[in-house]
Image (spheres, rainbow, N blue to C red):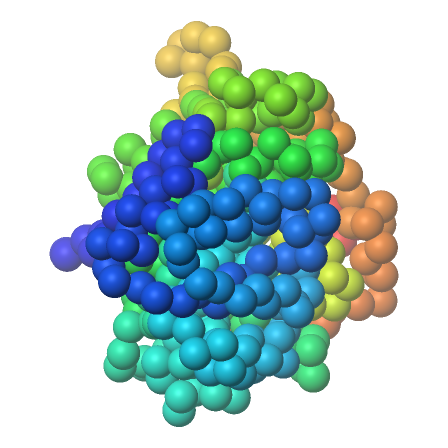
Length: 386
């Protein structure tokens, strides 16, 4: 069996690494950027830090910020028009998954206009041309959109989150500067951090996992266990921010190449139905799905999850005890940073559960789950979490 690994051409890591934008723009001969970012980052002064680099290097740009937290088909189409109007030759994406996913959609459609309807990109799209060049700078430590071949766009007409998987969409450059993450409020730090943990755990136990992806995911879990609580409670803690910035990138390196499971399948409809923040949905559902997936060939790997999550003397306990310890460690971390524990707390309506279950079962991530599942199983999990 062949294992494929696709990563950025180039990535930079570390405080202040945003200045390398100038290096890459000059090296690649770029002239003008469509700067895709969100309004909050403009308001909180994060965008200004990037504008300083662009102005110093003499790089022209126009800002596009007209998209939702869960970007829509129309947001992407508007971005494609903005790219053309700006006469840009590359995209600079600054933000969390919303900004970078929007940038990916814009870049792919600009290079492959036959997919202009956006909805035809769902699943594994048969695009033939690499995206317009994207330089991506994350401001959250969770989605790892800057290093993945995935992006998610909401089809509002059908209340559906479309997972798009395409090697042509990966940003050519990722710049992971933890100084850009200092403005994240506590709730967003918690939710995105648990999103990264979900990526690490799901891809660690997916059937496609192998030695290289396991290496990324195990270290990501260790770093999240060590740094997430401190990052939430002490937002200016440089060590914690740097640890989480690296952790989410490592998790992305793994899951982008081996896939995810039904935590993500179940989280996506919550975003489509209720605009639930993706990290919150994943964090809430993760322990329930871990318990469900313990009845699968992945069960022995829970011992390693428990170890990465700080459980002591894990080698001396039984497999069943190791499974429980891993799940309990995830729950404990989730509770310690204020993650809601029940779907009813975040506005999910019980009458919607059957429809949510169908949507989740049909999600592209379902195929990566280590335990074969069904609509009935997923519905039961939603009800247990309700």
